Length: 236
Image 1 (cartoon, rainbow, N blue to C red):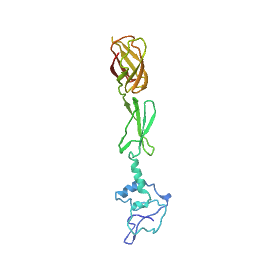
Image 2: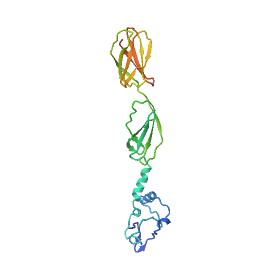
Image 3: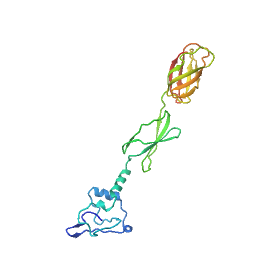
Image 4: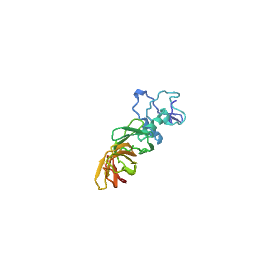
């Protein structure tokens, strides 16, 4: 059934012409639907492409919504409106300093804002991020910096060592240790000794400590690759 507005009034025949699809000018459904929603008329001589024509070709007897002329027109228009915004369902893709990618689904707040609980895995350096809409379109790529947290030492075990020329196992406990971190010892005279311990985890290092038979109070601090450090006074 062909539907429209004011096809026939008081016995007058409406001026509605039906053309074959090949004869139709190019029409944008989004524009047509916008005119309908705003209460405007596209024009009495506007041509519309219809798959089939049923019923009275002279027009309907009642006023109809002009949007009914094209099945699915409202849905097409709504889809077009959505493509103009950042839609719900967008993803964000992060790349870490090593180039590894991580695709995540953020919380959609608006067409101009997403929210995400970002976990950098304690990987300091330059990261990048871009957004991808459900239709596959991608945004620009933004770079940002992750700053490493300074390492901290809470204690060493054992807490004291015999003065000796032999190596003794020292476990260093704390936080934010990175693989490749170094430890710097200062003897009672203030001389420094930089050593590379065995990395066990972000909270534990292990080192074969040799005090050179030098009794007294020693200190130690850890340094990550970013040169941020934390100092701890350790027993001899």
